[in-house]
Image (cartoon, rainbow, N blue to C red):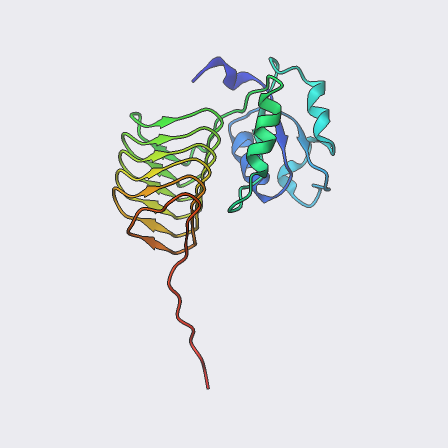
Length: 216
């Protein structure tokens, strides 16, 4: 790991996604300077004892060379809020920490790029690449030789079989399965529980088949 791991952290966001990240960072004894969130955060005990500011511009009190940012804003399908936040602060010279849970299993021959977040229970196998600022959520399986683009969200318990490629801004829903050698182009969305057996084009959406059960 680089020496940057020792820099203190500023968290952007105070909701559920941010709380998981803070839990990971606290378990690793990282110093968290503040949580930036317009809403109150007192209801979540994980934030206890951490300073709270409500305006994003409070980040500018800290010099870019002295801190690392962690984006705690979750990613929803077709939303670019997370990317816009990152690009705003990157343009001012800040960098984003890569957050990896101690409970994740990552091959020494996999590559996790800067700013990515990997949650507990995730498995990332040999030859896989996870792009910058992507979220690999709880208990996700990224099989061998997959390439995950930038700003992806691979939701809990999703499975990407071997040699799957996703481009930037792809969302894969909870429990979805992508079979081997599939390509998901930029902005595509896979619904929760879907089984994907063909390539998806740019901005294409794949929902699982549904059956409506009627009771008399």
